[in-house]
Length: 75
Image (cartoon, rainbow, N blue to C red; front, side, top):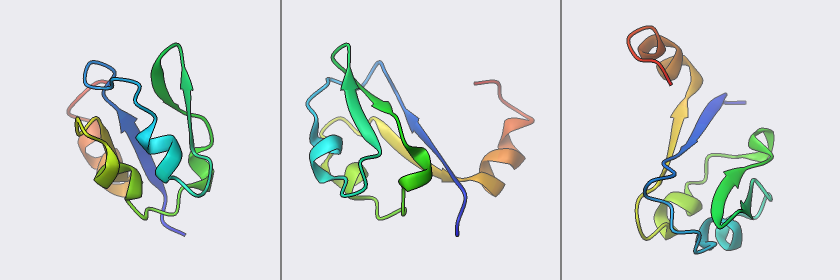
């Protein structure tokens, strides 16, 4: 199974819940009017959340790519 990292840009997230509705695997929940990744291990990388997000606040990055770039950037 592909290991991934899900990143939500909180500045872009408007808390609309489209990611929650589109995700069949219950990865997201709305907490304090923002989307949060609650169950990242359930993600199948279908990208439905990315497609439905009206502000492009969600990024899903394969872990090997993330690990490579992480040495250049801090979270």
